[in-house]
Image (tube, rainbow, N blue to C red; front, side, top):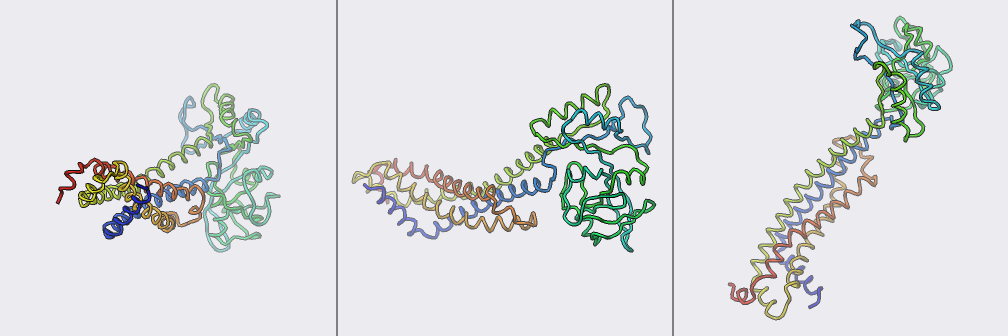
Amino acid sequence: MQVSLFFEFAKRNVKIHWFRSLLAVIGIVIGVTAIVSMGILGNSLVLAISDSLSTVGDSVIVTPHTGGGMRGPAIATTKDLITDRQLEQIRRAVAPDSAIPVYSGSARMKIGTEDAFGVVYGLRPDDIPLLLEVEEGSYLRGSSGAMAGAKFARENNLRVGSRITIKDKGTLRVVGIIKERGMGFDINPDFGIVVEDKWYQQAFSQTGYDMVIVKVRDLSRIEATKEVIEKQLNRRETVVDVIDTKAILETILDTFGRISTFTTAIGGISLIVAGVSILNIMMMSVTERIKEIGILRSIGTLKKEVRSMFLFEALILGLIGSLLGGIMSIFGGYAVSLVMLQTTKYLFVPSSLVYIVYGIVFGIGTSILSGFYPAWKASNLNPIEALRHE
């Protein structure tokens, strides 16, 4: 007999028992929607974290080691800093890559009549373009200017030309607004200001640096750069801590990738439940059609043809449910992204949309697998006993 004939038999049975078929389809729709929505949420979370980390793994960060070691008792008010001599050692070790010294602190400020509090970074004017982008205005040109972080500027209504008074330190004129940078492993100027290094040094009476950021041009050398800095400065004792931001970024993204897999697996549980529902419906179908199966077998229908009839029925349910679930998952992904991340900009990126394909394939596969045992049982019924069945 033709395959199309058994496909028609399967369609007929789905139509006859339309209500229970509808319930099975709804189960698949829910399962596919859940697994795809969780997959999209997990992927969007990874992308959001990746975007928010402005340091993309091209930096090595050197900070003073504060663990004590052989230095003896530390005074609570004393802060370890990187000296000019250590800075030169770092520069020689990483050449031709750039080593950027950074002063870092915080201060109370007066903006107009309002009080504010923010971080203050001191950078050499020539180094600023290597780390930051200007959204409005210009880069620093003199010691009387400052650049304001994007969020700090918004919160305090700062514009180019505004004045900031740092208590007991002096008044600075805003010459530029820094483009929003997001959370970073090195500096986070979004919530503060950037001033010239010499101004910071005089205002805060600080001679050493809080950190040195090394921008590595060739990412394949980032581990070697880290090692050469440690060998140069930590030969006798641990003087500085050297952080490889590429390794940190990979660890964070790997962790959130695992979270994404876990949330997708949670969604997959509902699809497994839908598969069990299809298995139950198919077993009921076999029981109701025992006599029909006996007639088909008695007129020469092969076992594989009987199997195909029931597998086609499971396939029809799986196709309808999975395709509807794929469509519904777009709305589900939109909703969970909006609620959990307050943004939907990661919904239509390829790495999110591919979960729709995964969900549809998984839904169809689960349906077919759920139909295998009922199909096998139907094909192995004894034709004579089946004809006698009442």
